[in-house]
Structure formats: structure tokens, C-alpha cells
Image 1 (cartoon, rainbow over the protein chains, first blue to last red):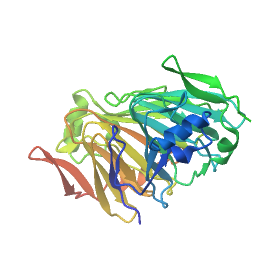
Image 2 (cartoon, rainbow over the protein chains, first blue to last red):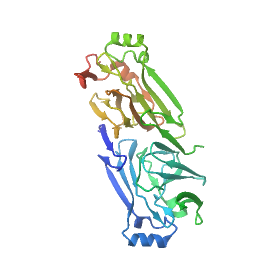
Image 3 (spheres, chains in turn blue, green):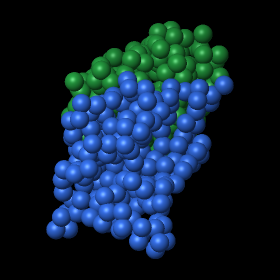
Image 4 (cartoon, rainbow over the protein chains, first blue to last red):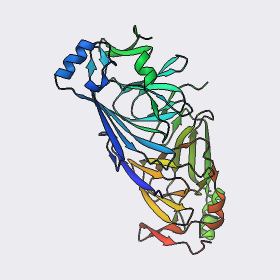
Length: 186
Length: 186
């Protein structure tokens, strides 16, 4: 039987206490994601930094799960550190990303290829409708921390984005984030 | 078709922008909830204060909804202002209450009558398992504001709690919240 529980979330550090699972993605886990492969190789050789960490509070007997994503600041070439991006395997499942600290951009793409962005900053809860792929991008100089809420069994479909990429890239131009077309979008 | 959107949540005031719906509960809407009916009558005669307000961001085509609950501070007799308390009509649906400001107590009761509490304070995300009735109680001196996340179609079942009450009451004793047995629990 499941019991209620108070879960302490630190909006600056992104810690979740208690948590049920976590994983870390380093730059070497993100090959194929960034356009500038030489820059990626150099960054991996220089210490293979952590790009982001995901901490789960997920109980299989509950319909709702939540957790945090903690994104480090940085760039590979002119692209900011980003998550892999995914659809949900269960296409009827949306999500909410509630930013706690830092600044970023949420890049979304519908199944039909329409692109939208939502600014990520403290106090903004991004509504991600069902069947929109979503990728988070840390465009700031500090950590980007957000709390996500979605169906426990939404599951991730990374394949479509991994194979085709997303239609737009978020790059630094004159010290600011800018959206440009992805020349490699399939 | 649904589109992504950034929803601005003010953790102090509890505002949600944009929102899709809202409602307000005044003390006169909460008859039957407090033990001291004479104190409730006096409070209603003295201006019928707002006890709490709920603001929704809810799209019927999405599986996930969220919003805020803004609870005013106050007491009726020795009982703190509280929400009505409910199970979800869809018993498989849990919920998360992420406190933004203020302090309170989340009182929960399983279908079998087991009682638990979770402290509500900024940074605590309360996990509410499926089929646990839940009532929020503002035990502080300021507003209690939390963001809730649950299935769009979880729906509320207020009847069971309205008819029987909850097994425990949260009352003020020596200036502090205390849990006591509800003598009227059916």
C-alpha cells in the first residue's frame, strides 16, 4: 500500500528527498546531439562534464510521478547544453515543467513538425501538451532547475528526435540565445 | 489542437496567468465543516471571509492539469481554516501538492480510515497516493499557497468526507496546531 509523504525539493540545487531513482548525463552520453562534433570531442577530452541530472520520485502504483531536472550551464560550439528531447511513448500524456531557478528555453515540436518555445524562468510552469516533443536548453550562466510532473507510465520515446533532430537549434548569437533552422533536420 | 504555453505562477499571491477557471469558498460555503457552529455563524455575520480560492489551468484534451490553492489564515472556534477534503472520483488518481508559501498541514485518510499528515511548507511537495482523501489546513498566520498537479479527469468525490467528516481534527492548542480525535466521526 502507498502512503503519503512529504518530498523536500531544493529549487536551487534540485535535490529531491526522498527520491526513488536518478541518472546523470555527461557530454559523452550526448553524442549526435550537437552539430559541432569536434567541439564535443574537445569538451569530452577536457573532463567530460555533466550536462544534466534527473531525479525521480516515482511510485509504480501511483498514476502521477514527479522529479527534478538539473541542467548545468555550458556550450558545445555555439549550442547550449540541452537534454536529448523526447516524445512520450503514451501519446496521450502531457507534462508540466515548473522552473525553480536559472533560465532556459523549452523547445517543443508537434508530431506534424510545428515548433514552439516557452521561456523557462523561476515561477513559469510550462504546459507541454500531449504528443509534443520537448527539449530543455540551459541558456543561462548558472544551473537551470525545474520540477516536472507527468503520468508515471508516460514513458519516453527518444528515437524520433535522436534520428531526425529537431527543426530548430538554440545557439548563442552576440551573447544571447537565438533560434536558427537546423540544417541537418531530416 | 493544444499548444504549449508558459503559465506564470506567483508563489506568494497564488496567481496563475493564464488560467482557465477559478472559484472562491467563503465561510458560508463551508457549513457542516467546523465543529463550533456558533463560532461559524458569528464569523459569517462578521463579514463572511474568504477561506480559500482555487485557480485552474485545465485543458480537457490534456491528461494533466494543475493550478493553485490560496488559503487564508484564520480559525473557526479552535479549528483552523481548512478545505472541504475529498477523495478522487477516479480512485486510481493521486496528486501532488507543492507548497510555495505559508505553512499548513495536509490531513489524509485512506479508504480504510488510516490517517496521515504531511507538513506543508515552502519546498515540500506532498505526494498524495491514489484513494487517499486529502484536506489542507492553514495553520500559519499568513496565506498558504500551493500548486497542485493531478489527472485532468480525476474528479472530486466530496460526499464521503462531507457525510462522515475526517477521523482527526486540526485545532489550536496553546498557540500551536494539534491533532485530536473527531468526536463526530461517523
